[in-house]
Length: 104
Image (cartoon, rainbow, N blue to C red):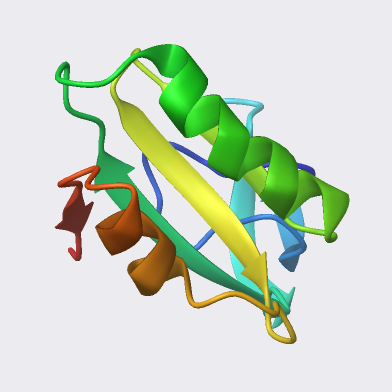
């Protein structure tokens, strides 16, 4: 995967998989061959903050080898390198972002 699948939380940045062409002539995933090496978390962005507040975190994450994306204007998916030097929960707390994590 070159980004995160919005509908399937198992298909995140770096995941590799095999597909086959099904009867509808569409790709169908038959197995995951490599799990992503990133820690992936999803959050609902609150309208209490400007986009620039979130952009700052996203840019720092990207500089350090991570990735982030926003879907539907309010759902952020972050891919955190396992050796990321910052505690993302602490950063969220210090910036008082009050993000709600999507865990399912």
